[in-house]
Image 1 (tube, helix red, strand yellow):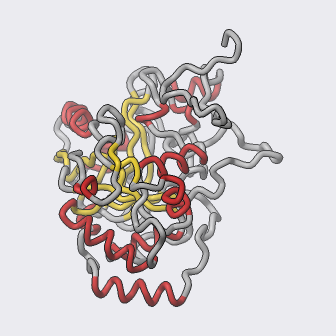
Image 2: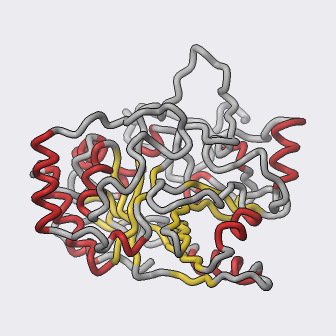
Amino acid sequence: MPPLPLMNRPGAVANPQADPDAAVPAHFGDTLREQAALGEGLALSPLARDVVAVSGPDRLSWLTTLSSQVLTGLEPGDGGTETLLLDANGRISHALAAIDDGERLFLVTEAGRGAALVEFLERMRFMLRVEVGERPDLVALGAMGQGLVALEEACGLAGSADSAGPTGLAGAGDPTGPADPEESAGAEEAAADGPAAGGPAAEGGGLWRDPWPGVVEGGTSYDVGLEDWTHPGRDYRAGLVLVGAAQAGRVIEAFERIVGPTPVGPLAGSLAWEALRVEAGRPRWAREADARAIPHELDWLRTAVQLDKGCYPGQETVARTLNLGRPPRRLTILQLDGLGGDLPAPGAVVRLGER
């Protein structure tokens, strides 16, 4: 994705050029307040993501045969799902958020990975009725908690997605609670002044609700049955919308009118988003996966793998590791006090003795 014009906003600080989030600001001048505002649903975060669109009547069945998840049940406004593309050895090639608008399937991948995804899909088309292409005109805006409701309304999408919680999370209930009447009134006023229904976000397929840390239908987790353990991401409720790049500014303005003024404004940088993601134990391909990572190591069996389906690349490794063995590695959270002020750089090797 090309760098967003948000880099020109007052206080915006860029990420390093080689960083996976180089296309979006690291922060807007106050990382801690931005993190708090994002977690409280009072800010949104531009996300460094590429978007690939797949059209044609065979798109959902085709991607179901290629990926780790069943996509044939996707419907407009259902919040989408998460899926993985694996190689023949079960190693993760792409981690995708998937949203379908009834005519097109939108696949959201890491920034800089869109071209590789298109190349792979083009090789696998054969005689199927599908068309594949990048969508550089679409950008991803993320929010958390009640901020997702405000972001939906800002895009003219209020009520389009199931408010009962993340896709596939049975009995989750609404994690954000009922909307405040005054806030709802403000949302209606903002919607009248801002993007209308069918506006910029509707171009991008709607809202994707992150299912993490729920266990979706057909998924599993290595902590199933542990009664005395609570997942660190139990309160994590995140998602994104795809909006026209030219309309992103209007969506941000409408969002700010809905949530009201805050000390840091309506935007949080990538550092705030990443801090909350890591705190929740939520894996990300660009940060935690390497060339030999398999889904079990990152706990992706929770949200991105349908264990009852077969006949997709890497399925044998998925089944064998789950049923006959254990993952060779496991992702974990390492908490450092930071008192020395000398924190390891991303990707640094951390050792305990000789290990």
